[in-house]
Picture 1 (cartoon, rainbow, N blue to C red):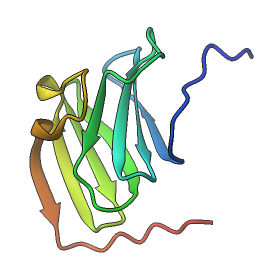
Picture 2 (cartoon, helix red, strand yellow; picture 1 turned 180 degrees about the horizontal axis):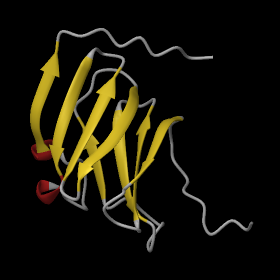
Picture 3 (cartoon, helix red, strand yellow; picture 1 turned 90 degrees about the horizontal axis):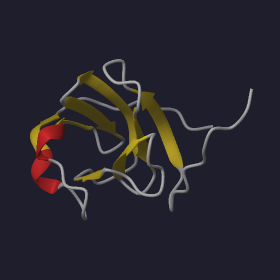
Picture 4 (spheres, rainbow, N blue to C red; picture 1 turned 135 degrees about the vertical axis):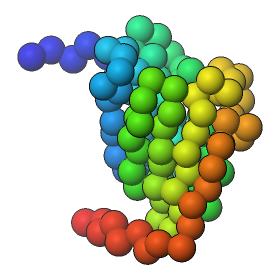
Length: 109
């Protein structure tokens, strides 16, 4: 019934995913081509920012406790190893695989 906290972000949020593997992890895709991961016990700053897409991130999903997948309107999927993230700056080295060749048909209203 009550707001427990607010996350402020510089770009529009396109999608949100709570982790089924941890009660305190949240990820969201953003219009600024990045995925932000937060520990809900510390909302002041993200525990990692995943960068590498060339357009808006339209979908994110925790595959397990250590792996996140993101989809973008750039027609790519990226699989991220959350063990390789950094809490300082962008986590470009966390990307473990990029898949392309599909069409992202996300409809924006």
